[in-house]
Length: 362
Image (cartoon, rainbow, N blue to C red; front, side):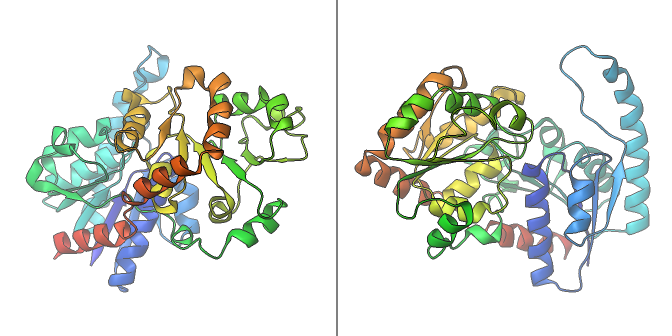
C-alpha cells in the first residue's frame, strides 16, 4: 500500500501528520509513505527526522494584505500543481491525505483529478481555506469538532479528534519526575504557561507585569517564553523570582503537563487536543493573529461546555494572572473544569484516522 501525506507549515499540522503516518505503519508495517510539504517550512526538517521521505513544493500562502509577494503566488501555484502532478504520477499512491497547510492544496487537487481516493484531516473548529476549497472533492473528512457540516458534506465527516503525542497519554506517575526535571518544589501549587516554540507576546507580557503579584503568592510558575521573546524577558524581574522557572523552550511537554495544577496557553488545535487528554484546568488566550479568528472558535468549543476558561487577548496583560491565581484557590471549580475537559478527549484519534486511510486505500 502506498500513501501520500501532504501539508504542514506549522507544528499544528506537521506533528499530527507524523502521528497519522506512525499509526498507519503500526497497522500496515509494509506501507510505503511519502510526505509532500512546502519548501522552507517546518515539515522539511521534522519529517525526515521522524524517518519518512519528503518532497517539497515551492508554494506559500496568499497574504491578505497587499504585498509584492502576492505577485509571485500564481506562478508558485502553477509550478506546485505541475510538480504535484508529477509526484502523484510517479509514486502512484493508493490514497492521499491532506492535513492542511500550503502543500496539501496542490497535492490533493492533483491526486483527486488522477482518481486517487483522498482524505482531509481538519484540526480546527473552523476549516482552513485549503480544506474548504477541497471539501467537495475528498471522500472523507476527519474532524475534531462538532458542527463541521458547515464546511464538509455531512456523509463524508468522521469525528475522530486530533492526533496527539503519545508521551502525554499517561501522566499519572510523572509528576515527581517533572518537578525534578524543571527544578521545581515538589507538591507546591504550580502554574504552567506556554505559547508555543516561538512564544506568545501577550502571555509573556502578562507575566512581566505580575512580578509584585507573584512575589506575594504561595505558588510556583513554569513559564515558557519562546525563542522570539527570550531577549525581552529572560533578564526581567519576573524571570528572576525564586518561584518562577523561565524557559525558552520546553523539551519535555509531558513532564510540564504532569506537574501543573493549571495550564495557560493559546488555543491552537493541537494545544486544545492535548489539553483534553491531559485533563487539567486551563485558561485559554486565543491569538488574534490567525485567519478567521479560528483560535477563539476553538476555545469557545470548550468554554461552551464549561471545560475551560477564556481570557481575551486584549485584557490578558492585566487580567490573566489574577484569574489564574483565583482559579488556583478554587478547588471545586478546578475539579469541574478538569472533569468536563476530560470528557472531550479523543486519545485514539491517530489510530481512527489511520483506519479510515487504510479503508479508502483498499
